[in-house]
Image (cartoon, rainbow over all chains, first blue to last red; front, side):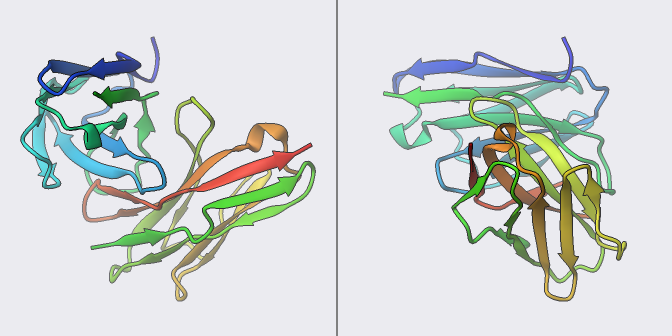
Length: 114
Length: 114
């Protein structure tokens, strides 16, 4: 596989469920990101990891828990979500550090919370 | 914090014609990077074009070009000879040279009419 992959592509979960989203990049990058994309709103940056270390948490509720075991993999663990958390969750990767490095995006996971 | 504004939620263009998508941003920094991303329906977001703020020359990529006005903090995208495959959401993005965060606008949905 090439680029950035995400699984699952679609997920429906109840508010009491626990699930995880997975992201994998095959580009040799060392920075990874989680974004939330809701209709008619800018992409919301949730978490940033540089060299496996979390460097940014944009006031994300604790019901979202990220994990970055290595530079190629990123997880988003979900528990006791709310209906307003329904959105497209995008993973991206890039070279870390200063400079105009573009981010490469995965196809996203369409999450529906019932 | 930097903000990115796309004032056109929707735009349409006739096939083979030219269309310009607007983007403005707010920053106190002098060194940064600007991007246009394209997100086709149900497909991955991909980079269209990027601009370094220190370069006066406008970036071009085949049918895509930008009009970068640094003093006005404006970064518009011009698509020439529009094709049906150009139909997508277009996002303007800003990246500081001080970190690897990227800020996105709310997007413009472009429709191409045959």
